[in-house]
Length: 474
Ligand code: HEM
Image (cartoon, rainbow, N blue to C red; front, top):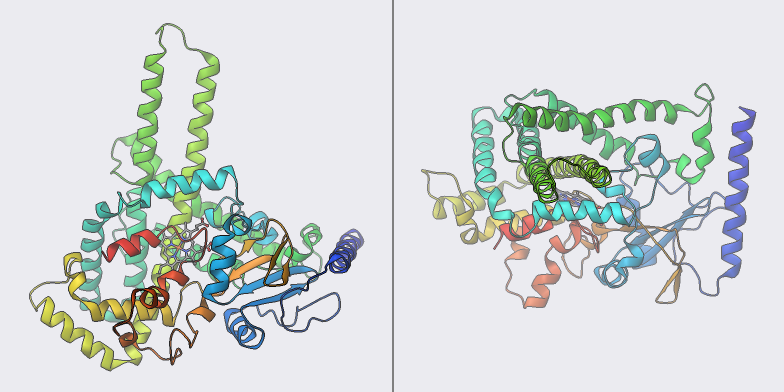
């Protein structure tokens, strides 16, 4: 205990020293924000839940870029589309890094998930894989599957709408499980889906709940607290959560490998890439034969490349699985909430569907262009209740100065899309659910500016599914 207390104290003093040193060097001031208390900074203002609500209040009080710190660890909230474009897009490379948060990455074992991999080789390889799965050429291939899964979802809702949450979970998880691993859940309490739901909830609401920051992220020495020490509750939680997350990454991938081995694998993101790679390896081998001799150096190189691909695939598939399931369930729930609160919107939507689609079939992708009110409802749902209101935290790689404000290296940056989608300049009566706002005739620049898809999918290194959603519309 004494050693741990000493380590924590030493870390605190080091943070204090760094904080004073960096503030004394500065000639420009930090962005404005709520007043910190000495040393501990804004610890009292950082709520572990729904941080986007106070963050949007700070935006109103202090402007487009706001700054807080906790024991010297800076946090910047970027609150307007202009500031997000200037910093996270135009100066993108300086803001593309991801923080290696001790609790999420190290203690809970999520460091290889795409959302948390630092800027570098691994993140580039993972993004390449994701673009192979979700690049413009691949998107139309998903249409038949999405259409048939969506129709089944709607029919299940019609049969028993009281289980709508379970139906939504099966729909969102099932679709991604099939696309990623070729696994089709047969029933509501499918073991893969149950595990995924539990882990996605852990990740979104517990591990990264308050923006992902835990005291141990500010004072890393706390991770060495003995498990019996008071205040070590987070270490106990992390141990359980890490085991769950590992199971979540391994379980569907092991299923996929077993189907490949048995020769029953259906085409999926993982099986296609693994089999492509296998074919390439075999072809390469066949080329350098002198069939009697195998070059051990080349063989070792091939083995290493295959292992690296497996590692990347396993983590990339899991990242897409979890990111897709959480956001799709959240967006669907927000939609249901909005419809329950606004029956007049439901009536208008029903009238449009009856007129365009009729009563004898369900809508398909080809109807989409003729359903502007439905499209407006979807835009308004994304705007009114953004599924990831603060985006994912990025990390500033080098000191920066923006409009006379100093943004230090190592600061965590949040693209506060909740504030942007509540911006009264773009969305009058922003708190209200008004799909009609997207039907007003405006010039191209205004139409682009008011599209919430420009904000709710992040900035710079954005959500990989954006293309999927944008292309759906064309
Ligand atoms: C309404 C639906 C969705 C919303 C609002 C959403 C939003 C976001 C946001 C805000 C980010 C953070 C971007 C940043 O770092 O600034 C993100 C990242 C990500 N999203 Fe989505 N997303 C959605 C659906 C999906 C789907 C369907 C998939 C997979 C098929 C997906 C996969 C990912 C992945 C893998 C990342 C991490 C990318 C990276 O860090 O490089 N998302 N998403």
